[in-house]
Amino acid sequence: HKVSFYGREFRIDSHTLIPRPETEILVEKIQEILHIHHYTSIAEIGVGCGVIAITLALQNPQIHIYATDINPYAIALARENAIKFGVEKQITFFHTSLLQGLEHICLDMIVANPPYIANSYTLPLSVRYEPKEALFGGEVGSEILESIITLGRDLRICFVCCEMGYDQKAKIQDFVREIPHKSLEFYKDLSGFDRGFVLQFL
Image (tube, rainbow, N blue to C red; front, side, top):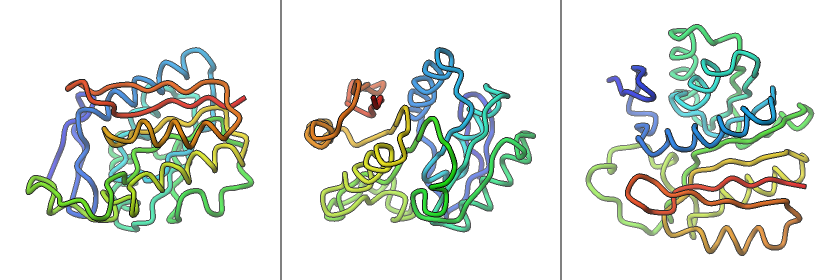
């Protein structure tokens, strides 16, 4: 199977989430930050088939991306896509959870389109055949996002940019309120739903 993302054809399979058009907005938000700050070291948590990491690598030859996934099939697929687009030297893949084992790497930014659906949610038929670990984020749904924000704080990352569920803005706001940060900006998807955030640490 193939899917188009940012006008490029990526290979996908049943082990990874099918990239959505909304995720292009996340890439645009990251691109705006890179344009201003010229960062070079980025981590992507949950690389999936690699569309975010590969698109960023193609647009920014100066960056290196450390891409993680708990699913070895996703890593293999993302690596295959990276080779197809000639950016395999810009992306290092790790089969791990979150950023385990990468704590020693100096990172400027964390990006993620993590699982954010609550475990109890009944999926619509359109996504019922996609991998559960790519969709469900815990009892509430926002647990993985909160773990990523905490990692950003602990590792002294400059920016954390994530996609989220349309109903998670208040939860993320409450969680971030307790954490010293410079700014928290939310953005909407093409349908007008809250779809992600850009968190800048002090």
